[in-house]
Amino acid sequence: MEIKFYGASAGVTGTCHILRVNGHTLLLDCGMIQGGKRLEAMNKQPFPFNAETVDAVILSHAHIDHSGRLPLLVRRGFKGKIWTQNASRDLCSVLLTDSARIMESDARYKNRKAKPGVAEIKPLYSSKDAQLALQQIQGIVYRQWQQVLPGVKVRFQDAGHILGSAVVELDLQEGELRRRLVFSGDLGQYDTPILRDPESPKRADFVLMETTYGGRRHRDRQATIDEIGEIISAAAETKGNILIPAFSVGRSQEILYQLASNYEAWGIDRFQVFLDSPMAIETSELYWNYPQLFDQEARLVKQQAGEMPLLPNLVLSRSSDESKAINKIKDGAIIIAASGMCTGGRILHHLRNNLSRAETQVIIVGYQAHGTLGRKLVDGVEEVRIYGQTIKPRAQIHTVGGLSAHGDQDDLARWYEGFENKPKVYLVHGEDEGKSEFQDYLKRRCEVTAGISKPGLVVDLAS
Image (tube, rainbow, N blue to C red):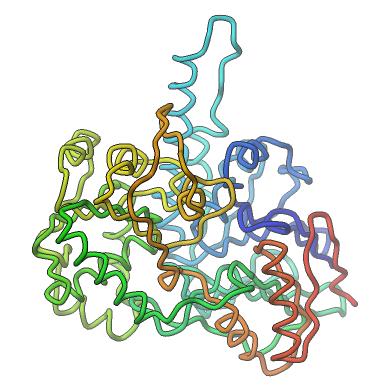
C-alpha cells in the first residue's frame, strides 16, 4: 500500500498521484501541465506507468490542470472508471470537449503555416478521445461512500473551490491493514459567495494537501471588492474598456455575481458587459442548474432571479463573429474572457486590441503561473508578443488576488485543524517556496511536521 508522487509535485499544474493497493493501481487526478511552451511540451511525454494497467481514476474536480490528460490516458489504453462528483462529471463534458477542440484547431493552424516537408503536427488527443473519456466518468454525490475497487472505498466532501470540487476520502484495506487517505484536491476560501465552505473530514492517517497559496495570505475580500468598484469608476471617467481574463469555471461566475450584486453601487448600467467565452457561458448555465450546491445567500438569489442572466446589460458572446464585433468598441465595455492566465482563448484578441491604450484597465483575478502572459503582465514587462505582434503595454494592470478560488495559508491551516487527530501530511500542488513556507507555518500553528512532495517520491502507507 503506497502513494507515489508524480504531477504537481514540483509546481501547481498537472496533478496526478499514483496509489497502489491490493495489487491495483489508482490515479488521483490526471491533469494537464500548463505554463508556457516548455512546460506544456511535457504533456506529450510517457506516463511513469502503463495506462493499460491503471484500474481506476479518482478525480477531485474538473479544472483542466486536474482532468486535462484523462483523454490522453484513455488514448493510451486506460479502460477503467473515472470516479468524481456529479457536477464535476457535467463540467468535464464542457472542459474536456473544449480542450480537445482547441488542440485540434491549433494543430490545423500550425500545419497550414508549416513549411513543405515538415512533419505533420498532431493534437495531444482528439475530440473522439475526449468523448471516450467522458463515457468512462461515473458521478456520485457528496458524502456517500462508494466501493471503487476491492479494498478501496471513496467518499467526496465539498472542497468549496469550484462547482463539484471535492475533498477525496479513501478508505483502504489490504489484508488486515486499514488506512484512511485524504486528498484535499484544491481547497477554496471560507466565507466566499456562491459555493459552500470547504469541509474537513474528521480523521485520516495520511493527508495530501494542496499549497497553491501556502506561502501567503489573500487580501481582505471586501477590500478586493471595493477595489474592483474603484477600477470600474475610474474606467467610466477615462472612457476605457475593462478586460478581465478569467477562468471559465469559477472566476467568471463569481465576477458576474459581484457585478450583479453591486450593479447600482458601481454604476454597471453605464457599461456593456460581455461574457465572451462559449465555455464560460455553458459553465454559467450549468452552475445555475446546481442550486443545491450553493451557499444560503446564492440559493436565495437563484430563487428570486429565476432564469439567467442576472445582469440586464449582459451580452453572451457565443460565436467568433460576436467576439470580433467587441473589438470595435473602444470604451464602455467590461469584457470577461478566457483564458485566466492569458495563455490562449479570446482574451488574447482583446489584449492585442486594448493593451497598448493607457485608458484600458486589466483586472487580474486569479493565479498566474510562471511563463504565462498573465504573469508577464503582472510582473510589468516592457513588451509582450501576441499572435506575432509586439505590444508595449500601457494599460493599467490591477492584481486583485482576494478573488482567488484557492484558500490562502490561513484557510489551508483552518481546514487541517478540522481533523480530530493530527494525521501525517504531505504537501503537493505548490511552488517550492510556497510549500516550504507553509510547512513552517503548519508546524508553528498546528505543531505538525509536513513532508514535501517531489516527483518520484514513494510513501509507504503501511508505516
